[in-house]
Picture (tube, helix red, strand yellow):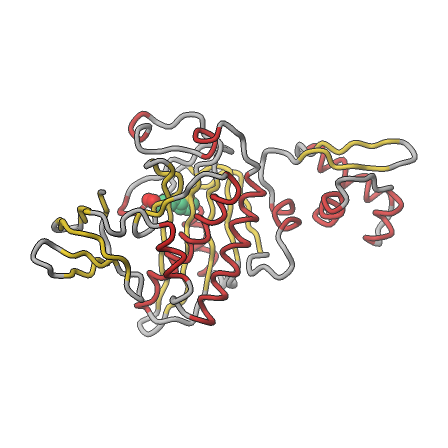
Length: 319
Ligand code: BTN
């Protein structure tokens, strides 16, 4: 009910809504409306009350919340089951637990802070309090194992489009899934699978976006950046999450219906590596060559100096 009160206030944010109107719309008592407004205010929402006019939402609180996110997500969006925690070890860990408990596709786990954020290749991910977007998306696509890496690229395209539209900054993708602004990392994606021997049970896409950071730990300060550092502005994280989910939702549906052919050119349009000489650092060796592009499975094609084209499935790319 609190979510519904918030949705109504947000939908009518240019005007005042009387307690009576809210209670009629939501079929509840005026006292119940007042209690929900009071509770929203305690969470940090600036809701003004003017006699004979009613209530108006001025500004959302800085903390994320489940009902705030649900109230923003469009009806037809795939992701409307939101699990919010203010503090977790890692949203990936929670998402895996939820899958084991039967969570449905379209569930998202969001946190305001992670104490043990996981990065790719066993690294940690700096996840400061209320500064960034730390979330994991649970998907259950009926696709073959070999297609799973494509989903990371779908996520990268969705993020690049959403962040670029919102911030006006050029967002580049470094294969497979680093998003950069002016050569520094602004967003990372960690895709993990749960699988039976013959099929994918679920794909958990972990997304970390550096949004309002002013500082980073010393060891990453030269390689990491945030939307705020690049543009000098603060961004509303809940609004950004909704934009990301909007982009992801339609691209994922389009991918399931039409395959990777729609995603590939969108990915390439943001790609930083194509046509450039790169070093692909793999677990056991490194390869130097020209990045030709990606194939239909999202695998990177790297041409070495002998002309041989290597398919790169997993590596760190240095440009
Ligand atoms: C990378 O190394 O580039 C991937 C980083 C992914 C970080 C996100 S933050 C939300 C989710 N939970 C985690 O523990 N990791 C991912």
